Image 1 (cartoon, rainbow, N blue to C red):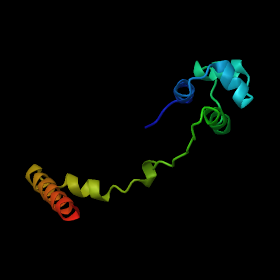
Image 2: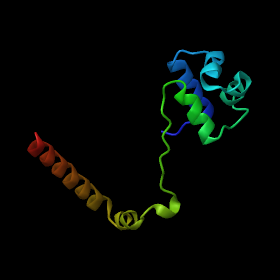
Image 3: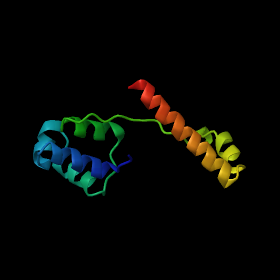
Length: 106
């Protein structure tokens, strides 16, 4: 899930049940700065946002997401050459394989 910095900060602060003033005291970041971030008037750096949510007891983790260039489109192209019936048969086979795997795992 992707969130904006202002939404993330508001959510973290509300979950921690702290006011902007209390978050300011905990983090050392001025309350007006917190207000500007939460209202979307200021975009914080990763470091500042991480510091603020950490003061709320939340760890901010950066996750690399694939870009357009990182996506292997080979399987997509191959699937697009199949007829609808062939796609349906492939999906049914995958479903049956999954069901069999689950039975064996339990």
